[in-house]
Image 1 (cartoon, rainbow, N blue to C red):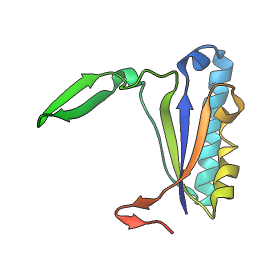
Image 2 (image 1 turned 30 degrees about the vertical axis):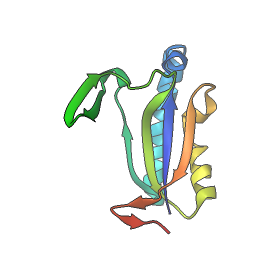
Image 3 (image 1 turned 180 degrees about the vertical axis):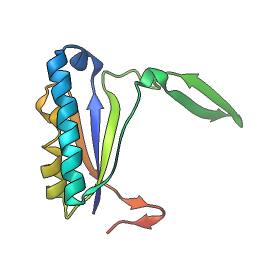
Image 4 (image 1 turned 90 degrees about the vertical axis):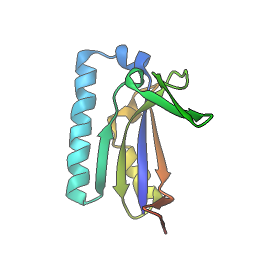
Length: 123
């Protein structure tokens, strides 16, 4: 079963962390990635740039409209994700608890099963 573990970032929370705490998060993600590779459960992981560097694309009256920055005003934004393949939801949650962000008040980690990929429904 495939699961997306998404990490939701609140910039105010990150800005309040010390350099040591930020380094510990980075080190924790590095260790988590290596553990997932060893277990064979990691499909991919990606970190995203700040939403201020995003482009929002819509089509209105048949014409593309592109605006800079995040579409929604929100405290949190998607900061990155892990796509994993594991036995079940319980295992996905167990893995998610190992992400350092889960220990920091104000940061969020969400686990969602992949419904379909490449046009194929997941079991």
